[in-house]
Length: 379
Ligand code: FNR
Image 1 (tube, protein in one colour):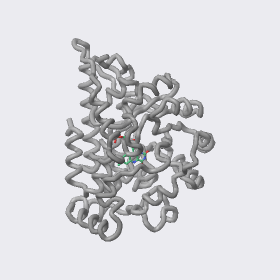
Image 2 (cartoon, protein in one colour):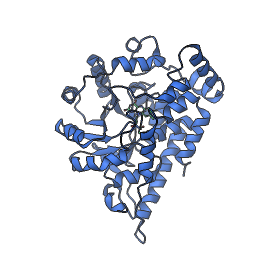
Image 3 (cartoon, protein in one colour):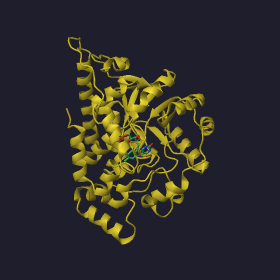
Image 4 (cartoon, protein in one colour):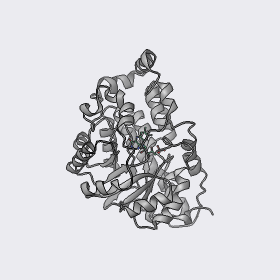
């Protein structure tokens, strides 16, 4: 069994420059929703059952026609190539070895083709709708050419939430020489990261965004790029635009409200991810675990419902399933693990989730994750 995720978080904190650790760890504004995600899951009481035959447990499931060894996938997480050398490739390899999907962010350091080539497996692809539809279309073509089985459309970031930790840490502020000095100092005082990533992990641009699109600023210019390129005019009608250009499953990520789930179903999406972007967007919105049951009720089994936000253990995975999710996405858990120990860290994190899920299933008498539901919870 691997280290618990809280220990991997501490290891990442020690190894990464503060600006990167805080970028992963932080949320928006007062980080209320970030905390809510954790609190809501921890407050859910699992129902202990005894004397059940637990000699054979099924943790595998099927999602969008794909077999998953565990009911989870690695969530799209931007910048992962800065947490470890060619980080997205390392994480995708660990996911492949554990039999779970890896979802590549639009804002990854390694490009889609590099990740698929060097991990040896297709990956889910996450898309942000930007103003330039030609750019979106080119990304969709690349995803199709790379045989991505699932497209995840993230819709809770038409504008970026303010992340004050990033302003203080050197990530997006302070401006000028002060910020530059902070970044240089943090790099110099984290020699393992400096050697592994800064010196030997190049190139550091965004692999899915050509330099002529993102401009001179490269990765440093990403905040400006987001601000000026995310498309504020996107509405439900754009799902039809996407559908004409993508014939695989379209999964919409970032729903918290049952009215939006109804709209998404009417647009013919193939799956829904209940998410508040890990508490990184609108602070004060409910925890994903709190929003999940109403959406599950609304969807009523018509498409798979996934959930993310605050999952830090296999127990949390079972809690989300008990609330009605078909599977989960894990975000920070793999980002911490990658920062802590690269591919081996992500493999360790997945082994931890697996063994924790096994214990949780055994002690609730749940022998098949596909049958997990409300009956696993104390009323
Ligand atoms: C994210 N998330 C995210 N989502 C997305 O659709 N595209 C992206 O590029 C990113 N980038 C990103 C970076 C970092 C550092 C984090 C922590 C998160 C959100 C992510 O997919 C997921 O919704 C949350 O991380 C889930 O919450 P937990 O598991 O981190 O608590």
